[in-house]
Length: 183
Image (cartoon, rainbow, N blue to C red; front, top):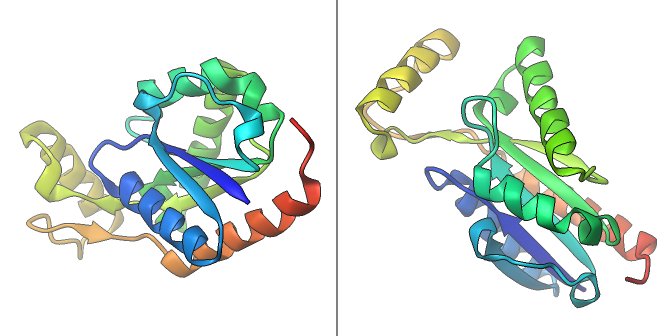
C-alpha cells in the first residue's frame, strides 16, 4: 500500500507528526511519500492507495499553502481513501468550546477547498516557545497562562499523543485497504 502524506507546518510540530506517521507506516510495510503542501502540484490518484493530509491551526485557519494544495487537488483526493489530521493545541483541551472551535476550522477548510475528508483526526500540537517571535511568544504565553498555568514559557511543551496517532494510522490503513476504489 502506497500512502501520500501531505502536510503544512508553521513551527514544526506538524512536520514532526508527519514524519512520525511516515516512520510508523513504513515500519508496518507501507510505502510512504512525505510531501510538504507547498511542493505539490497535482496529485495523481493512481499513484497512491490513500492520502493522509496534515495541517495545523493558527489564528483559526490552516496554512495558506495547505489550503491551496487541497483546493487544486480536491477532486483527486475525493477519488481515493483519505484522511485529515488537524493539529492544534485545542485538541489537548477538555473544554467543549475548544473542540467546537476546531471542528469549525475543519468546516471552513471544507467550504474553502471543496474537499470533505473521509476521516478527520484531531491531534494535539505543542507550544513551541523557542520558535516564536516576540509578539507570537507574548500571545502564546497568554494562552498558556489561561489554559495551563504550569506551562514553562521558556521551553517547548508537547501534547501530541503518539500512541493515539499510531492507532489512528492503523485504523486508516485497515479501512482504506477494504474501501479502495480504483482511481
